[in-house]
Image (tube, rainbow, N blue to C red):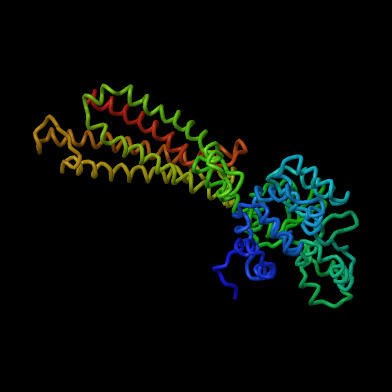
Length: 468
């Protein structure tokens, strides 16, 4: 067993070639990539690529961050670039080319043959975030009248250079996909069996225009390892494997988390992102929400005279604002999650609103009832001090307590109801305008509910204390 206290960096520093090669046998490539990304000296990474076989370094390269990939390409000779490309799948090459500056892309493409360049350019033309942008053309197709023996011979001949041989794709003379053939079907049948009797005709597929979110959902729902990709004329043009989807699922989840926290998604991993980039990604939301938040300041200022008359009103402002925001955030999280997992879509709008109306009614009534009793207790026990003009314990004093408590409770009833409805409606509104529902983030809804709750509170207070 390899000594876990020995790092890859120390082996590179001591030029331990044999131990570096053994290191690649001991650890998963993704873990090695994390260490390589952390290396500060690009020459250390270059030494590593010269030490390990081309097959391993090509795989390692696909796991590196865009920043590290760019550092390497700038140091590589043309021969090293050719060696890397010859041992990489074209979809992996297209992925990192999409992140590189134009001058480096041109340098790389000039080092590949015409056929390979056409494959890469074909992938690069598909819109980012679609199945076409992540698919690979490295798959095995078989004619429908091929026998098992003929299929196995073809797999032996070309299978090593393909992304997967676990599933083959049966096509007709016009390249229409008519079936999927798992490798095990070939193993368990005689050599003379024709493939059209073995292939599965009920299989999942997607179009080149299918979004990556939908692709990830299909993989998860049907527990797939590979998915064929068809063009607009329903011809097979590529496949997506589970290896392509797993990083995608993580990226989608990370992006949604950042959006719901009101941060624009980062272009690179956190460790490689400078404080200035993080600031640029975060600051627009902070400033925008600050401007929205100023509406609360204006609202409080407009009702300043009421505060001077009934000072107790200010004590419950934080509770009202927080409760409304929290109620809305619960709804927005539930609905956004259900949309992300394809449990809900725009066609379910009527069902969602009907269900959320009932939920909002129950939650707001229970919250208001509890808050009425809770605030009476706080005032009666002087936990929240209120200098009433009436004698403690008198009927007028009780009515005064009930008036304050009723005002806050009624505000919470309306605010919670409104927040629950907005929390379920805003993600649907985003879908209607073909936007990611995660942009309707918790900070956005919280800020919206802050000034909405205050306006409701002060309008009700103005009515209650002027007419009762």
